[in-house]
Length: 418
Image (cartoon, rainbow, N blue to C red; front, side, top):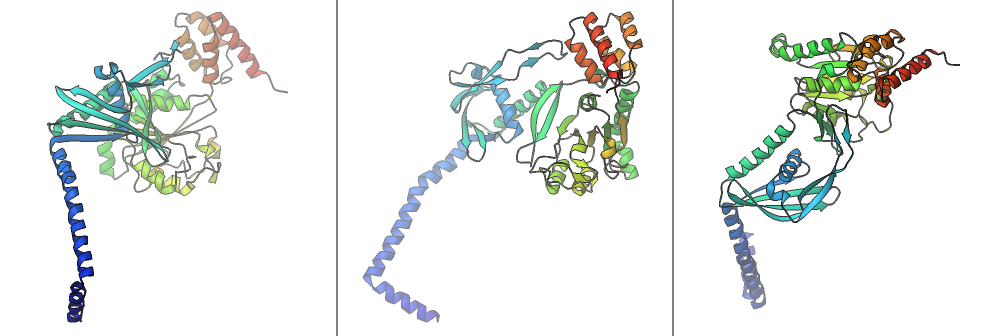
């Protein structure tokens, strides 16, 4: 059979027309290869002479680089820039706020040159719009080592860390449901900055500090090194504030999780909870709004109740993480969700006690102890939430006005409804 094929090929090549076509084809292939040689050569030469790094807006380091970029002198002097409006500045103590919009300037999309540690570098900034808007930055440097580029990126990371040193970083799930993204940073607050009932702040503080100090003990006992908290009580009693302060107290990252994200399936949620940033507190607020007993309360929820349970404490659940669930209605929660092992400590946060009212008044009027005691003595315990008290104190322009408003609120709260 092979001999037959060889004879047939010889017969075809003996035909001048066929032989000419084959020759032309070979010439074409050779010419195409030669045309590509300069490009291939230049590509290899460029890789040998130029160091390049690429960042895009789907990575948290991109945002850190833009912040670093905005603080550089060459960026501040650029005559080709883009501008965005930053959120209004708020004083850390909450005493006063500046509503004037703050503008942030940054080199515009395009090609820019800059110096870093005595080396000339360049940046190409691009924006692509398809199914999503993705911004990309290509960094390049000629006649240098990769280490210089690494040092630049390490400087960016340190710069971001220094800016967030005394701030709480807040992470949320991105719109595609597959990654945690840095959404915001807020001033850290200590746990004692939240006016809780006597003993509650100390209980939380001591429990979570003990948890982090006993890692080796957990390992020796073969117990998963995880901790779960349930904060329950009426609206406005400080459940969310306590969770934020708890994260700030221990310098934890706070990961807020909403189960209504339509991309959040059982597998996706389990994967996300295994990949939370190191030293994180995971906050799921108003858990009863998602599942009443085991029934879904929102059509957007794709995760199942069993998927939620497995994600919280399944075999693959992350070690060293803190879970905080909050609810206004503990009685609506299924027993399996809050059993020991998933929830290790339940804390009820109720309406303001006399000591909480006193603490809130002293925050606003630290030098009026005698009048504060008279207001506290007239307070029907548990009639107002801490949020209601705080709102009255914020709205009042003086202690006289605050006292009058509080007495009116006391009377309204104790008047039977008809």
